[in-house]
Length: 438
Ligand code: TRP
Ligand code: SF4
Image (cartoon, rainbow, N blue to C red; front, side, top):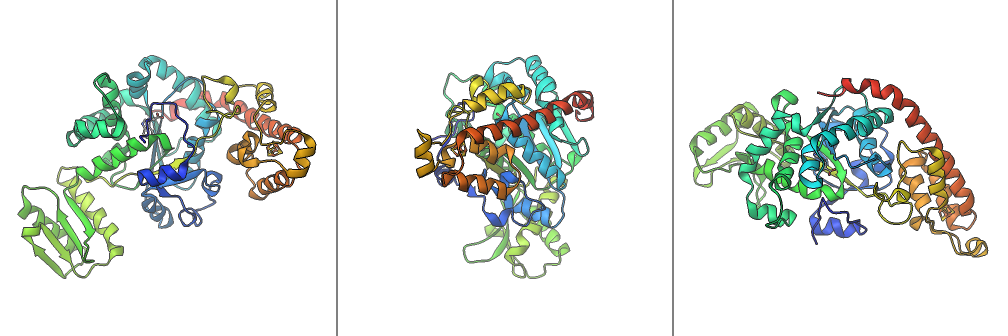
């Protein structure tokens, strides 16, 4: 199995995805003690992560951290696109610096849009919706890939440590792929890592919230960040903490520098073994590794190379379309659009696939199946904030006390409020766009 970020596959078996690709489970201890954890985190919709521990540490110790995500405009924005921005707005409320890339280079290379078309979709559709949903201009920048010189430079420079075999293994490219398409994952890596350059806030933990289809890009970015490091700070098999030089030139000099950094950090029991390109730190514990690594990252930047932290990521499930297939702009009956009328949304909701039984009697007797119900999914992902209200619906559905007709009416009512609220704020939002753009 391969994850193809440009296909329209739906993913059903999230446990298998985790196992097969080494995505970690987004378990309770990662979100439980965050400030007012967001419903997407509480409800398992964000089901997996890579390296979220770094983010958890930054949040709980009030250290700086950043969010970087991207949008690839493709027609009208629907509820499926809303999830990432809901997460971003939550992370902004708890102190993250926000960066949002408009993936116009990617849309050009992979979907055949012109840069102009992408720009129009971003300015007329996505960005006003983001603002209407509550994104604040403070500590937030939205930029276009094609206009961001630092991102494009990084894409080019960082590509030095990726070879063609790796691109084929990751993305399945063959001889017919066009070069703009092939290059677009490197631009995304540029997006993800540029926020750690000095002028954008420096080395710090960075979280990339995305749908699981984006995992190949996350793996590539993490590999590339690692590949550019000069040092590896780690614990060995026999439980020693060490700093290892990863390159083959200037080893003596790099070890000298490492010794200086470690001494400045007050580690004194150092043992240098030049043959192993190593300095063992006998007075360090595993808890010190992250802090030490942070200093080495910074020192690497100061010496003119790229000491990036590996970026972290969270992965969310996809919302199912109202018809039971993927929610997609190209199938309007499957999707609720943020700029669509509440009437139209109501109609789609009334026709949606539910987990109800064939007859009313049967449903009263055996109950419904909320886990297979698109209406319940709307409540879970978007419409109901209160966990106990949600639980009541779940239980009364299973117990056969809740009937689909009423349930749909309630969903349509909530949806109407949500859409009206967004659409009211959109007018003001359109005038504020400039405050967000770089
Ligand atoms: N590839 C993403 C998509 O298809 C868009 C994107 C571009 C992105 N740059 C990014 C996502 C950086 C996360 C981080 O939607
Ligand atoms: Fe879905 Fe509500 Fe019907 Fe249960 S009662 S199957 S939650 S629509």
